[in-house]
Length: 396
Ligand code: MN
Image (cartoon, rainbow, N blue to C red; front, side, top):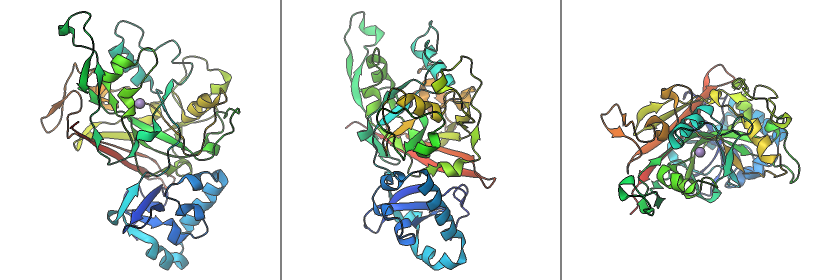
């Protein structure tokens, strides 16, 4: 068994869904560059026969921890060597599937640097942060039906955009393929154990509900977004596709990755008050056509996942197994840490020169965006989140 692939050793063990040789999809765990078939290796967890992690995720924190310990035992104890060897498949031989059946999807706006950059670009001359920003994690409900697995091609969306200034005052919108297509490097949190309708989830209860963490690319058509967003928020500029990574890193693997969030510059209402080190020290990397673009640091996010979950349920809204929420674009203070082309090209005004000599403001057909991340693991090494990737295909 090869578990020497960096970031995918025994301290990680992320869950996913795979199929092999045309057999039905089922649940597995990644170790090194292999997948351990959890149906073949662990017949005491029938939920692993499902083509999604939902059944297992619904069983709750105590069960997640117990099963993780048993998988660790399988992979480390000599007496299981034969069972494990028969249940391992090289990654190259399997097909990966969406890891969970997606319920409701919420996207936040939790990076102060991203919100500040976007405010300066979209609303020049006014305060970059809206008056509510430091008091609640701003979010919107996304479209769960168009959440796709990493590797799925993303077709350039069409829609309305504002007429160019050259068209003169009073001109109506233009319809056509987006000319300002962008990515957003984000981190996602999937709910395993749901909450009752009518009962808010406290800021201390993240680990009772969230099963694990993964990477998200919230593809965004900035021209559609700019024209449609005021006053009700993102709609068609975001809903055409959202890509997620195939491996869900369990919270138990992130025990050494928690950090304090940034200092608070406004007092928080009690239901959002920080209740521990709920920031997470993930370092993301964004590549465009294989070339390094930026390294967004998740530890700089103003709002924590615990605060996002508390806020999205404080009105009595429930969360259900398979719901997920994403952080919003991750952008750190330095330009080399920004998580979207909107910011990196400053709204298209400052084209970016890539190492291979090509120049971009927004994405062209054929462009491939790949987001990866690492975090401190419990073994002293960094664990990997793998990657979420997608290539833009032309409209026709
Ligand atoms: Mn987003």
